[in-house]
Amino acid sequence: DAGVIQSPRHEVTEMGQEVTLRCKPISGHNSLFWYRQTMMRGLELLIYFNNNVPIDDSGMPEDRFSAKMPNASFSTLKIQPSEPRDSAVYFCASSRLAGANTGELFFGEGSRLTVL
Amino acid sequence: KNEVEQSPQNLTAQEGEFITINCSYSVGISALHWLQQHPGGGIVSLFMLSSGKKKHGRLIATINIQEKHSSLHITASHPRDSAVYICAVSVNNNDMRFGAGTRLTVKP
Image (cartoon, rainbow over all chains, first blue to last red; front, side, top):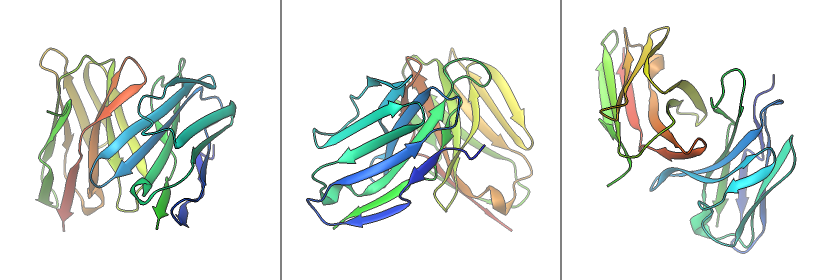
């Protein structure tokens, strides 16, 4: 299996621009998570989906952030408009809700975002 | 006070030493995770446990639910074990809270 695939790996953009981060979970996994990691705050859960349905988005910092999961194999995290304080590494992870290794997290490599 | 506290924040050891990293939490959990983040940034799940003890190679993780405490042990440490180790707890199944991480450096 290819694991969780995120793109882009790195993005540098200017303040005010729209940023879209993408994630392909492991096939057969039915939970998907978006996390943000910064030096100041460490890892934080932004939002997670079960069976493509957003369950808890209380970690999403502001209305500028939105996430979608149109099908079981694809999710996006969008920031519009972006601000310098959004600079961070954004991780996507997936897991199973039931069956073998339920709940074990598999992380993507992360997308490093720099907003100038 | 953070819901998940790790200690120590930083740890330097000589190759071959036995290492212990501690994690205490203050919320009800359904599971506890130990994650490893290498200097390149990737995160790998080492253990997920809800009771007792698990072992994988030179790594051992224990949890005491009554005391809300978990430990990660590394036996015969090696420079390639150098990484940040993060304790995370699952609250209400998928909501997760993270510790600040322990930066381990193992010197040859």
